[in-house]
Amino acid sequence: MSRFTLVQEDLAGSSTDEGYATAASDFYFVIDCTQTMQWVLDTICENLLAVVKIFEDGGLRMRYGVLEFRDRKYREEDSLIHHFFGKSILDRATSPCKGSHFTENVSELKSVLEGLEAKWGGPPKESVFDALKHAVECPDWRDEATRVVVLFTDAEPHVPDTEVKSWQDCIEVVEKSEIDMLHLVVSEKHIEKYRKLRLIQGPNDEDLPGDLLPLGDSEHSSESLRKVLEGIGYSSTRKAAMDNAKKGFRGV
Image (cartoon, rainbow, N blue to C red; front, side):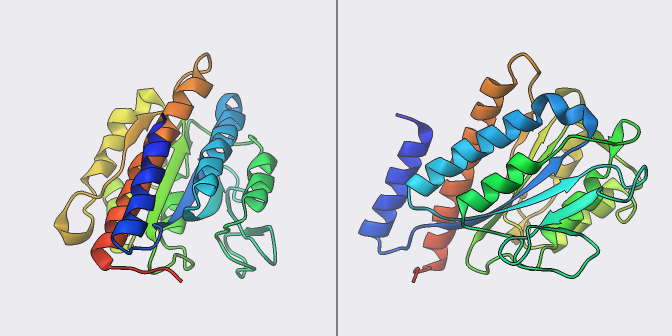
């Protein structure tokens, strides 16, 4: 029995026995799409879709968003792209919003993920800080949902970036937002650097929940990523259930 099956049973039990609606979560996937991610980008997308399918089969109230980023200092064009669902599939971060940043439609999500392309990028550092800023400040988060950001990158962040100038600025941007979890899936050689973002404070002055996990290597990327994403899905759905229970939230 997988950990996801256990989560689904937990959530179903909460809904039936305690009268709480199925937990709601909004997931924003922030994905480095530079050339050096070529070896793992397809694997990330395949495993994300596999995990999302489990959510869908379990009847969980999930929505998904995608932000792809590259290196704004090297090439501004196509370096920070929000994907919109509904009215328009694609728009730039600087353009008026068309549609929603999130979708419940797995087919729409699949179309976007399969269209991601690893290209460009300048030096080894990328616009990680700016990408996180745009994700956490997204205007389309649901009030009742547990808000989850998942970052994938094999690079260090630019310090300074185009908008966010330092590690401390990035920490403050995230703290001022109302996200509930931040998961960081990064190259193993950069894990210690990203540990600085584990200093982020969440609600009630507690550490912001989330994982700091290795992206894996080319030889074992599929297996390791599946385990990473299963862990993220497990912890995120359990938190959503706990949050909704605390709020006494009832679905419609």
